[in-house]
Length: 72
Image (cartoon, rainbow, N blue to C red; front, side, top):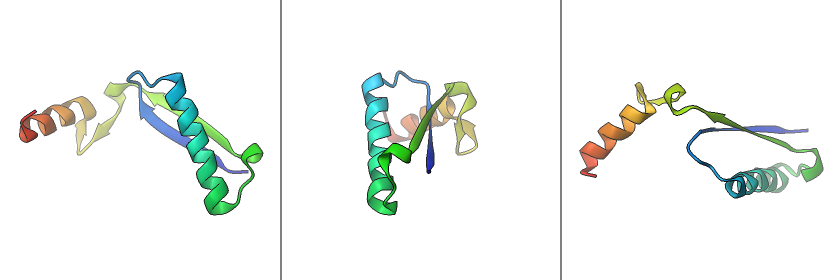
């Protein structure tokens, strides 16, 4: 009974996108590990943007710096 947790920032992910994530994760476990879809659980956790960091920075600042470096 696999459990997959997907963490994403809370930035307007649509219900349709969540359905696609659940379907895709379930299909991956079915294909790779031969797990039964009915016994596969997928949990989507949305994290506030200010609670997410990468590269040693809050993600919003990381994105600002990355955009400035790429000229966007």
